Amino acid sequence: MGSHLLSKSSFIKGLQCDKHLYLYKYHYDEMDEFSEMQKAIFQRGTDVGVFAQKLFPGGKAATEGSPPDYKKGLKKTGELILQGGKIIYEAAFMFNEVLSIADIIVKEKNSLSRRSQAKTEWNIYEVKSSTSISETYLNDAALQYYVISNSGIEINDFSIIYINNQYIRKGELDITELFTIESVIDSILPLQKFVEENVERLKKVIREREMPGIDIGEHCHNPYTCSFFNYCRKHIPENSIFDFSGMHLKKKYELYRDGIIKLDDIPDDYSLNKNNGIQLDVYKSGEPLIDKDAIENFLSDLNYPLFFMDFETFQPAVPLYDNSKPYQQIPFQYSIHLKEKKDGELKHFEFLAESGADPRVKFIKGLLNDIKGEGDIVVYNKAFEVTRLKEIARDFPEYSDEIEKLILRIKDLMIPFQRKYYYAPEMMGSYSIKAVLPSLVPELSYDKLKIKEGGIASITFEGLQTETDMIIIAETREQLLEYCKLDTLAMVMILEKLESLEK
Ligand code: SF4
View 1 (cartoon, protein in one colour):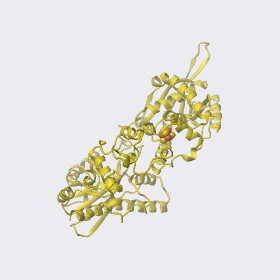
View 2 (cartoon, rainbow, N blue to C red):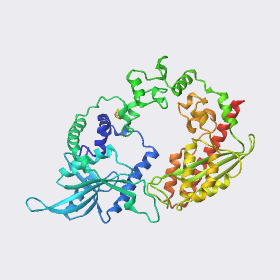
View 3 (cartoon, rainbow, N blue to C red):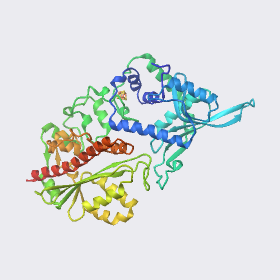
């Protein structure tokens, strides 16, 4: 262990749960593996942090490396301050065995102390890649204030810099509009006693070296899903009450604390909502539930030719294109399978944007062309595609009339599964296409694909924006095309299965 016991991140872990902090310190290897999505979110946080340094140009970095070399960082921060540095990035401080690395510190002014000696004051800035300030951010800032102010630094102000999601890019990126700088000093000063007490409490947790006897509960999900979630759940069997879809966490943990853990343990007279009741009945019977009348009714409302349509989008934190906001979902790819009639051949159309330019105009032009004519458009989760289309109509009004007509043709293949016209035990309460496919069309699978879900498609395309290796670009584009194509093919086959059930 290093010379510090706590840091910002371990303090936040400890506030969530003593055991979380203990496991992080002594059983790091048991931590859940980070998903590709989580890694991408962390990377985004780092990138936004570096980008925000442009608000205070000309500074010097005190701490570098990943993980950061904090010992060097502490030394260099001291040196930079002594040398009269005005702006320091990643400035490291330690007090009472707590380490804090501030994103940006800026020398504010030299004022006179009571003894008429020059006194230097600093503004501290913490950068977040989110679009608002949460309670956790305030606790994090309060800890930093505690460490930095007690290290002999006079703090004039403490602010959180976060992304302004109302900013619409017009031409050159306006970094002062992209970020909101909000002083939180009035919120974190009253938290200093809370910080001090918790620092002492959490240091005791670490020193005692004894696993805190804390059971799983609602706290495992708040403010973040704990990184030892699976470790603490080894005793939860398959088909447990935690698999109930849509059931409130509070209710699940009430059952758990009452010793009702397996689905088989649910008493017959236990009151469940309709969906959870179906989920339990189907689990117990082992047979799918099929409401043929409702399925027939749904199918009778579909008009051939059918266009099976799916979009992929990405959400850059820093808007890349004119007329777009931070985190706006930018459609960059579609796949369409066209089926002229029930037993007809399939035709396939697709679009995948090149990196660099705004993909939206080429996307919508291609789509309107590929999908023109008569016939319904089948999507899975209509709200997603319709919202993206409305956003394009808003940002490029010249296409709004055609888009409106297109939206009127959209039908949602998710309905029969969401409304439980068809429900099978292996769907585990979910009605996502990834849950429905193995039950209805087991022969079709995403398993062999490099890209298996939309979130990964999104970060993969974002990664292409800076990729220069032509071979990697070509391979990645191929993977994206395969993934999106499978999404629409899955819809075709799911519909065919529903049609066969109807008979
Ligand atoms: S999973 Fe829950 S109980 Fe286990 S360490 Fe995390 S927060 Fe604590």
